[in-house]
Image (cartoon, rainbow, N blue to C red; front, side, top):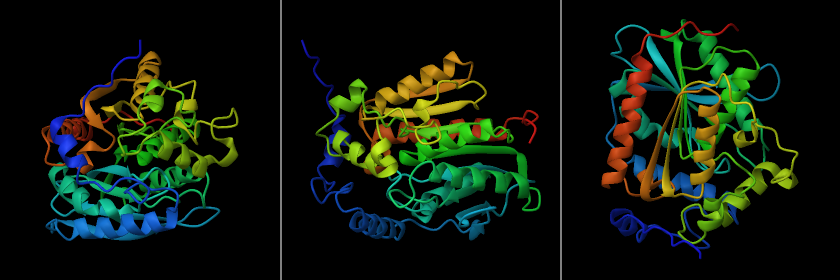
Amino acid sequence: MPRSRPAIDSELAAALQTIPIGPNGVFDLTDIPATRQAVRTLAESIASTIPDEPTVTADEIQVPRAEGPDVPVVLLRPQNAPGPAPVLVWFHGGGQVLGFAAQDTPWLKPLSAALGCAIVSVDYRLAPETPAPGAAEDGYTAYRWISDNATDLGLDPTRIGLAGQSGGGGIAAATALLIRDRGAATPLFQLLMYPMLDDRNTTDSSREITDIGIWDRSTNLLAWQAILGDRAGTEDVMPYSAAARATDLAGLPPTFIGVGELDVFRDENLDYAAGLRAHGVPVELHLYPGAYHAFDMFAPQSHLAASFHHTLNDYLARLLTEAPATPTAQ
C-alpha cells in the first residue's frame, strides 16, 4: 500500500500560493538564460527592501589561478571585529545553473556583523557553460586563496568554514572533498543547507516530490543534465561533481545538514549524513516537518524558517568561536 505524503506546513502552504510556479516559474530551466535574468531581477528587487549593514564592507575581488579564468568573489568584512576575524566561504544557491554571488549580500552582511566573521561569497562558474567539477574547482581556488592570504587581510587562517545553500551546498560538499584529497588545511566545518548531492535521482524523495513546484524531480533532472550532460546518472561521475558519489567520507570536517521533509533532496541528505557519521565525522542533522525545498527563502517569516535560521546561526557561532585545532599540513 503506498504511503501518503505528509501535509505541507500551513504557513509554508500559504507562502506557496504567492510563488510563481509552472512553465515560467521561479525555477524554469527550459530557458536558462531567461530564468537567470529573472533571478537577478528578483534578487535586486529584494535587496532594495533590505536595510544595508554599514558596519560590513563589501569588496569584489578577482582570485587568480594558475590556469584558467580568475574566480570572482565578494569579500564581506566586519569593521568592528575584535582581532583577526574567522572566515566563512559561501556558495550561493541556484541548482548550479542559476544565481550569482552578490544575490546573497543583503542577508550575508547582517550575518557577518552578528557573528563577527568575514564571508567570502564565491561567484563560481555555472552549468551548462562550465560542466562539473568546474564549480568545485572554483571553490577550491577560493578556499586556498583565503587560506593563503588571510593573515595579510587581517583574518584568521585557522578558522575557516565552508557553507552553501541548495546547489551551492553541493558545491561546498564537493569542495570539502577536493580540499581533503589535495591535502589542504581542513576547514573548521561544512554547513550544508538542503544540499544538492546526488545526480542519480533514485531515492524515495526524488521520486515522490514531483508536484510541489519548488525544485521538484523534473527540475532536478534538467539541472543535472545541464551540470553533467550525458554523464548524469551513469558510472562516469566523480565525487567532485556529485558528492554523494563519494564512498570514503573519512577525514571530512564536522558537518551541519538541514533539510525539509518535503524536499526532493531529503533522502540523499539523510544518506550523506549517515555516511559521514559511519566514517567518524561529527554530524548535526535537522529535518523540518512539512517543509519543501528552500522553505526559509520562500516563507522567511514562518516559524519553521525562524527555527532553522536560529539553529544554523547558533551552529556557526559555536564552530567559528571555538578554539581551533591545529590544521592539517598543506
